[in-house]
Image (tube, rainbow, N blue to C red; front, side):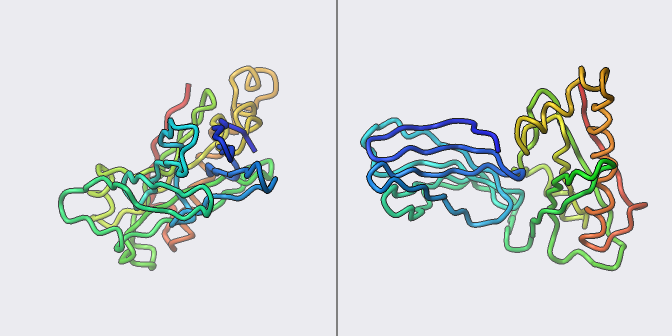
Length: 225
């Protein structure tokens, strides 16, 4: 787990954490001395504080999106953690998020470490191995990738492509050690940078098998520094 930040208010503190490839927001109630976790509409998502400047504010603003849901703003009531939709990005062209699905798969690297893979695809995609897979990955400097929405990706989904995002070592999705094991100096001393490359390659098989695709119908693109 990686603690990314802490917002303090009169009655509560809000902690922003990275854990299991997802960002969690937890609220600590000073009066009750207990932690509670914000809930979100989807199991695979990205969320972060949206800016709550008032120390006495009864609500906490959160920016949210997923590979299916466009950029959205929620206000959470701090006392109850009830969620209220405030704004959502308009997507032109008749996009219907109900037609798409997102999920999380895990690839096993050569050293036995589980690597998270985020997927998005149309629910109408055939599960007979005929659909192609596009796998993208990046992991360097502790800057990984969050499962966010992209309108530019919709043309691929409309054509029946399954889009997968590999959260490979070098980023920080699984904590500081995830970043450290992908560093250049560890590549030189312990050959750890190979983790970044093998994670990416190994991601094809579970990503493809989860929607019953054939790995040979896969294309890959990634960036490393």
